[in-house]
Structure formats: C-alpha cells, structure tokens
Image (cartoon, rainbow, N blue to C red; front, side, top):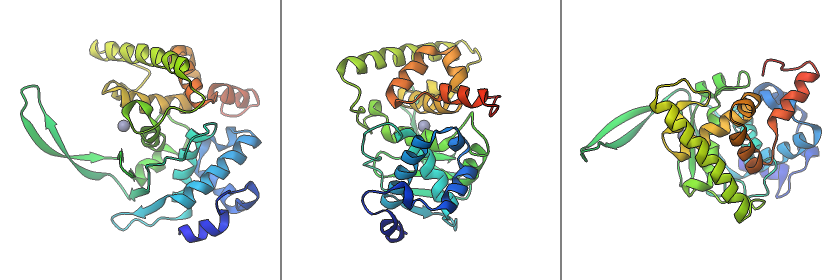
Length: 265
Ligand SMILES: [Zn+2]
C-alpha cells in the first residue's frame, strides 16, 4: 500500500497528483468537504496524501481496507491539521479498522481501591503509542452527514491533544495564548462538570465530563460538526478551539447556508 502512495506523492504531495476518482470519493465520504474553499481543499488533499503515505492501515477480523476506508479516515484526520504547521500525528503509526464494535480489556479501581477487570465494547480508541482503532460501522454512521458525533475527529483529537501529553502545542500558540486557551477551556470544562452533576441536559456531550482529555476530544467533534450552536451557546469555548485549530467552521457553514446549502447546520 505505502509503496503505491509513496510513488504517487513522494515526500511533497501536490494537488495535481490527487486523482479525480479520489475527489469524487471524498465528496461522498467526507460530508464537510463541500464546505471547504478551493485553497482549503488543496491543503486537505495534500495532507491526506501524506497520511496515506505515512500511516499503515490494517483491517481486523477480516475487514477489507479499501480506498473509501482510507480516504474517509485520512480526510477527517487531515481536517484537524488543515491550518496547523505541525507534524502529522508523529507518534501514530497504525490505523486499525474493525467491521463493527470491538472488545478491549479494562481495569477499574473503585473509591475503596478495589480493582476489577472488565471487557468493554468500543467504537473507537486512541493509544498514546502508535495506534488508533475504529469500528467501520460507527464511522459509516457518523459520516453519513455532518454530526453531531464523529469518532474519527474524536480519536485523532486525542492524538494531538497537548494537555494529556500526546501532542505539542501548535507553534502559533505562544505562552500567553496558551494561558488564554487554558482559561477558556478550564472554565467551560468546569461548567460542563457542574451541569452534569446537577443532571441538566447539556449541548456538549456529557462524556466530555470524564476528564479534560475527553472534553478536548468531544469539544473538537462539536467545534467541527456543530460550530454555529457551539458559538452561540459556548462562545468562549468556540473561540478557544478557533484559536487552537486556526479554523472558523461556523463562518464556513454560515457562508454555505447563505448560498442555500446546509441551512440546517
Ligand atoms: Zn475519547
């Protein structure tokens, strides 16, 4: 696989090398592709080409890795990096795809220190050292339209999250900007915790209250897939993510809505 993509893209993939058949496929498997302007699409295609060249895809339990599978996963991963001058998930080597949910062993410790082991059924998982794992069935459901959930954005957000030690702060954020980012992030995380403890309904998925790393991953999903409502209801968090990712998906969607597309988003 990598040999083909290496021949196609080499070290510096160019837009002209992105096959037309892939453009057609991307329009089907990445619903927000149509929202990107031509310059963004060119950058996205270049990052997709690099990811396909650099990362190893493996089908598990008999699952077949096709161009559609590769492009669906790589394009959503590339969206996160679109305006970041950072390495492309440097610690990630393999992307494992199961046909459906998969089982992972888990160890839990309760408040009394009692340890128990359970098998957990998962749709996605990100490992600090080298792999992300997906259920293709979940990916198909999440990418049929734009949001509210997207397991690819979620797991790749874990790969770049600088707060849980997996990633580095993007170079455009200096010390002061990081402090501002953390202030907004911490404030909104505390707000979600309080709402979940009170049993209130929340716009941001309450799974984000698990810990800051999950809040970052869930927040990333919401930022890209429900940006206009996030901006209305949690403007501070929206601004924090806009600063982090250097993207303004709310404006992108408003532009398309004004043009008569995706008005419901
Ligand atoms: Zn997570």
